Length: 88
Image (tube, rainbow, N blue to C red; front, side, top):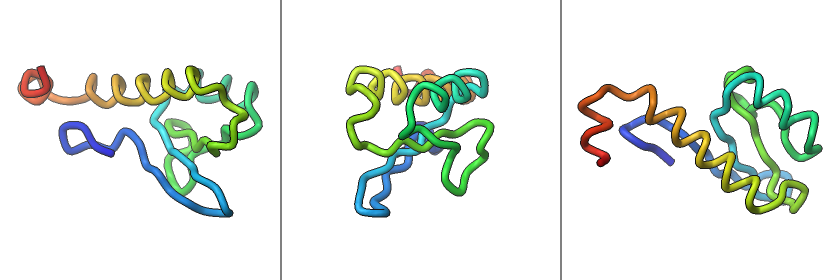
């Protein structure tokens, strides 16, 4: 999934389950990995800035939605002013 031509989420089916990779601030990424067994460093991505979440119910739905929103906001923040204005 993209915003302004930049990736903020990647959905994949592997190992018999659905996985979603999300951009994340490094400190928060580490905390989420410690808190949830299904949150791991980004699969084939920059492991400092991306987490991959196995959608197996370990992460509560509201927390997962928050992680998706966080990823979206991080990517939007990195867009140019003109690209951000197009979104509004």
